[in-house]
Structures are given as structure tokens and as C-alpha cells.
Image (tube, rainbow, N blue to C red; front, side):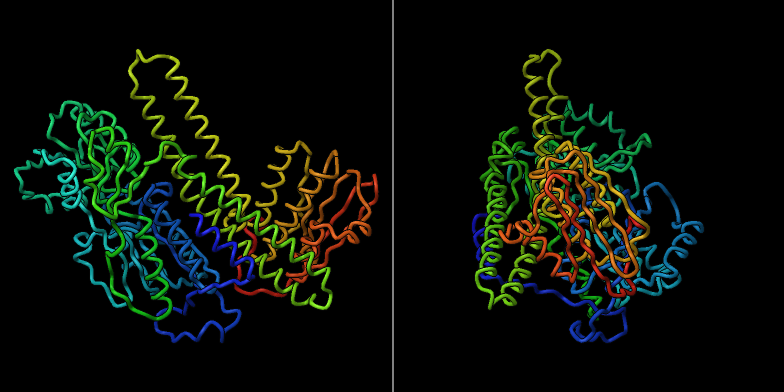
Length: 614
């Protein structure tokens, strides 16, 4: 985020305006949705995400993260996600087997699916063959499907998605621009079925490249043997790498691992077609932007849910991307890179590249905190405008939470990913050092990698503090338990966490408020109480959720504290008021403090109970 974005965010906070434009989601195919404003309380859509590969595959992570964030940001109602990682690369033949079909049938018999998102051609086939029997005929949105692999499929009007464009010829053209003296290109992919889809596209696109270039295709070699071969390639040669899920020996490998091994051993530049391998030692290329696939597929899903029938597309799913360090390593002129390319690692250090981003985020938070404090003081001074000030304070808190969410997402998706790539690069550099390298150089590299890991942890903790994503993914109980443990480790004050019974359904705004109250209450314990121990208790009594925070510290006079209008108490009062809760504070000097907030909950239907409380 640049300085201009920070100033605009702060200006919006000053004006107290929150502008949220969201796209309403409609019912399944065939129904005519009424506007969201006319149907208050309508349950959000259920989205089933089907992936053919393991959960931590970089491409899957990029698609899944971007798709979820896009759907959540643009939907006017909460989206329920159900995810299946089918690991189809482990199987041959028709999948799912009878056992898998029966499992899916049981899991979703009572959960009607509104749209199926299928990643990859094999997953698309499964979705099309089984959606009528298993998923109530829900429409299908596919992502990253090779058109050739789906040429025999009949795509009905309620099937759309993103085509996988494999930029073999474009990557070779980019390599020619950077290295006009290329005479030979070695194309290599893995031996698994998805790898062979990419190789087939390479053979078709590069059958006659022209320009006096010889193209050699290596389909599914043993990774160790090819790495040894890459060491001996003559000048004027380049390597074009595709995906690796399995090598020629039958060993399962990751694409990033294969690219790292090949690039580390190669005596010539290595180009790639996948975003996840830029940063592993490859120069770059016309890469598949899996995050772009996720974003475009999510937008198509929103249109499908609103009743539209958009056609499939490949727009916005590839981009030219390069590693500045590898351009420098091979003496390639960065001025030959096409305009509009994304250049990674072009700063001397992570801090130099992101210092304004981090400082700007901190400045925005400080500005917002100051503005909230000023508005709350103004509320005391102008009693006649109390209702209006309270409304404005509520909007500002919502704006603050939204800004925290955005900053936390940017820190997590961008900064920590860059730091992870930096750590991987340092590790690869350490492994490539000759055995007779000076010990102090190895120690410096190890120390630099350690500092990079620590910086990544610090920024990750800052991201989690700004926006507790665990609330959404694991539930209120897990989020509070984790926060109490982290508080105990950081401040050295023992904190016991107790949950009384099943919380049932806790709306997201209530869960966020209780989490923030816990942060504020334990923060006061750390700063002012001088306590030896503390307790956090959470429970449900009928239609109300109760949160109690107790400590055995020095205590204070609540009447005097409210008369002086401390910002901490004001903030707690405002948060409680915004969700209709009752806040009480019982404290005596040298006798400790007990803070209790009781939140009455209206009946909520078709919602998901708190995950950790089930």
C-alpha cells in the first residue's frame, strides 16, 4: 500500500464515511432472485470447492486464498465454503471410486450446494458426472482447465470457468528478447498425468519455433539424472520447465522442489511457466497466474449465482514475471523485459522494499485510534449530540475493523510470501556454496536467514493482531484460547481459559466484539493491574453469551475511572453498545477486577455453530 492509499484511508476515517459496494448473490439456477435489500436474513450461498491436488500445493493455495477473499469481499451475504482435496494425482483411471462417491453423498445430502468450483480438468469431469446425483445439479465454475484436456466434454449453459493458457511459445519469445543468441531449448516436465497435459501443449506450441532454435522435449525424466544433465548444457541453451508432480522414477515431488533442483544445477538460464517457481532460481517467463485464476473464477461464480450465464474465459490468468536477481546473475539486460512485466526481488532488502508499507499501515492505525479517541471525547463535551456521535463512533469502529482486515490481508499475502521466498533463496544459496567456502560467510548466511524467519514471524503476528483470521476459520473458542496462550507467553502472567458448555451459534459481529473486549481487558491487566494470575471464562446461559475476565491485581475505583472518562472504558462501552450487550466492571483497590459482558442473542437459523464449540 502506498502513501497515497494511506492518506485516502485516513481521510475517509476523518469524514466517518464507510462505502461498501457489494454484489448480491442469488439462489441456484432457474430461480429469479429478489434484491438482497428485499430479503433480509436470507442465508448466504453454499460453495463447494473441489481440488484435484494436495492442500498445500502452491497453485491450490493461490487459487483458494484469492477465490475465498474475492467471494467474501463482493458477496452481500456470508458465504459458506465446503472444501474437498481429492488428491487425484495419486490415482489412475476413473475417480471417484464407489467409496469416495458414497462419502461425498453422505457429507452433502443435508447441505444443498449452490455452486461447484472445480479446479483442473479431472476435477471438472468428476463434477460434471456426479453433480446431478451428489450435488443437486448445481452449476459448475471450473478454474485452470486446459481446453485440450476438456475437448471431449459437453459444457452446458450453467458451466463456465477459466481456461488454462500455457505460455510455452510466449515464454520462448521472452527468452529470445533477453537472449538473442539462443540456439537450443530443452523443455522438461514431470511424469504425472497433469504434467503430461502441459507437455502436450509444449509439443504443439513449439513444434516449429523458427529462428534456428532446436527444441528438445524431456518428458518425465528422473529428477536427479536431469539435474546432472543440466550441469553440462552448452552455451546458447535454455531450459523451459513445467510442472512436476512425479518424476520418471515414480517419486512424488513438488513443482517448486523440481525447479529449485534444476535451477541450482543448471549451467544455463532456466525459464518457467508457473508463478510459484519464480523465486526458486528461475529467470521467469509468461507464467500462469493462479491467483488470477482464483479471482476471475470467483467473479464468474458471483455472476452465476446472480442468474447470469457468462462464457468461459482465459483473460487475466497469465502475466510476464521475472526474478531481478536471476536477470543479474545471468547478465540479462532488464531493459529488454516487456513493459507491464512484474519484476520480483528488485530491492536490496525486504525492509527497504516494504518499509513505507509497514510504516504507512502503522500510521493509519495510529491516526484512526487518535480520531476515535477525539470523537469519544467530543461525545462527552457535547451531550446534546450524543446519539449522533455514538452512530459515528460505530461507523468508525467498523471502518477501523475493515481497514485492519485489509492491511492484515496485504501483510499476510504479500510481505510474508516475499519473506518466505527470501528464506528459500537464502537456503538454496547456502546449499550451493562450495565446501571450501569461508565459515564466516556460512555463518552470515545462516544469521541472515534466521533474521528473515524472525521478521516473517513478527509480521505474521502483527497481521493476526490486526485481524484475527482464526475467528473465521476455527471459531471464537479457538481464537480466545490461542490469544490467552500468546498473552501468557508474552507477558508472563498465567491466564486460565474456561468454556462452559456449548456456545451454539455466535454471529460474526458478536464473536469479533468478544475477541476485542478480551484484547482490551487483558491489555489492561498487563499494563495496570500488576496481577499474579488472570482468568477468561466464556459460556452460554439460555439466549445470552457471557464473557468474564478476572484478575487478582491492584484494582481501581470504577466510579472514579468513569468520571475521568478513560479511553479504555469508553472503547469497551461503545463495543458493548454496538451489539446490544451489557457491560459491568466490579473492582476494588487491592482486591482485583472482574469485567463481564453479557450479549443477548436473537434466534439465528441456517447458520453454522462456532466450530471449536461443537
